Structure formats: structure tokens, C-alpha cells
Amino acid sequence: MPAFDLPLTELERHRPDLEEPADFDAFWLSTLKEAGQADPLVSVRPVETGLRLTRTWDVTFRGFAGDPVRAWFSRPAGVGEPLPAVVEFAGYGRGRGLPHERLTWVNAGYAHLLMDNRGQGDQYGCGGDTPDPHAGAPGGPGPAVRGLLKPEDYHYRRLITDAVRAVSAVRALPGVDAGRTVATGNSQGGGVALAVAGLVPDLAALLVTAPLLCGIRRALDLTDAGPYGEIAAYLSVHRGAEREAYRTLSYVEGISFARRASAAAHFGVGLRDRVCPPSGAYGAFNVYGELAGSGSGPVKEIHSYPFNGHEGGDAVQVRRQLGWLAGVVGGGASWGVMPVRRHLET
Image (cartoon, rainbow, N blue to C red):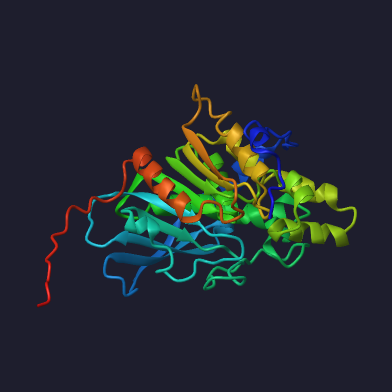
């Protein structure tokens, strides 16, 4: 599969023109103000996972419209001090799954909250546990087109609000250093994490790979894969609805969120990615922090993988994230040195 987007030299200076709504900030301020009127946590219940080195809790918090949203919260077992928290957002069609599936961050010594995707979880993985009671507005069956014709009805308004509330929820949990809260995700999770960075002004760091919802209009012109293909398919049937759809999508455009972000940021992108074209990630990276008002802007870096698609750098990228994050937020729990007893067979 050859590269199909802009050459790397053009990607590195790509700054797309945005049709950003004049009320973008007011729209999200009003949405989050309404959602933030109640305490975030509903319940925190310990669960047995069979993992001796990890402790996990089944968390329910209040998301959009006060709806209950599920999450897994995990910490290294036997560690008492407050830890930096990594809040992770899952990919398109995936739910929170089972608590032992995502162990990278807790094994690196961080507290870890994995948020469920409302109304998703049926496409791959091990499912989800959070329904979306507001999914009745006109639109197609997939999350990317639910409520597509009105910003107030759109699925991603609800999901992004849930994600911001997830940050409030993890900060309310015991044993978390609220000042060192990190958002991370790949694909849809990356787009949602980027939105969180634009909406939570005191986020410490952002880790994003192959983000969805970035450069949406260009992506719709480039690819029929994945969620963008669902939007194109919907518009192929609902001819003449483009204006309403594009207006709705402009309120969840990741490049607009990136402009407002101030957290230190680490990006990754595969240059042959046909699901989330690389011009979206580079467009977000190139304008990241420009409205933050912090002099030279936040610390940021991006890593590209010329021969990779939507998987990006995979485990190589995760290794880079681990090293970078430890330098930014000071690392997670201190494990010390475990004595090793050698047994020799004779």
C-alpha cells in the first residue's frame, strides 16, 4: 500500500484552512458547564482480576447529561503514594473490554483509567458496558453518523464530554496526583484525547497516535475507510445534507482543539494510514498550542513511520511514549530492586 497523502516535507508545514464556528468555544463551554454540575463519581468497586501485581476497581462516573459511564481504574499493587494518572480512550467500535487487557501504563507505575465508549463496543475486542440513551436523533447506525445533522445531537459531543468528565473522575479517586494527569489514545481514542487536551486547561500531557477527527473535510475527500467511510456512505444516501453534516463536524474537529491545547504533547503517525490520513495528525500537530498563550508554546514532538499504516509505530511508538512521559511527568511508582534467588538444577 503506497503512501497516498501529502509528501512528508509538505506534511511538516501543513496548516489547513478551517471553517471553525464562531461559537465553537461557547458551544463547548455550555456543554461542559451543564455536565459538570454534579460530582463525577457514582461508584468505585474493587474487582478480582487474578493479577497479583495490579489492583483494579470498576468505576462508574457521570458523563454527558449525568449518564453513568463505566471505566476500569488500576494501580500497581502495594504502592501507597499518589501516582500520576493516565486516562486512556479506546478506539472506534471498542468498549472497555476486560480489566486485564490494557496493562502497559499500570505496569509502568502509573494509575490508569480506561474509559468505556458509550454506545460502542460491538465491533471488536471484548465489548463495552455503557449504553447511549441519546442515540435516537436522525443518522446512520454507526457512532460516526449518529445525530450527524445537528451539533447538539451528535454522538461525539456526548463522547468527548464523557472524556472530559473522566479526567474529573480520576482526579477524585484516592492515590492520584491530580496535577499529573495525562490523556492518551489511538485512532478514535487519539481524537478524543486531543479534544480533552483542548478542553482541560491544566492537563499535564497528551499522547496521541493516528488520531481520528483531525482534518475531517480532507479525510472525507481522501478515504472511504473506517468511520470516514460511514459518513460518506450516509451522505451518499442523504444527498444535500452535506452542509448540515459539515457544520456538525466542525464542532468536533481535532485541529480546532489542538490550537487551544497547552499540555506537553507526543504524536505518532503512519504515513500510509488510509483510516486516519496523516495530514490530519500533522495538521493538528503543526497548530498545536498556538492559542495557549504560553510564549513559545507547549513542548511537543511527533514521530512518523513511512512504511506503516493505521498501526503506526505500534510497540515502538509505545516505547517512545513511555520514555517521553517519564521525562515530562516524572514517572510512575518507584518499584525498587527485587532480590532474585537463583535455583540451579544438579
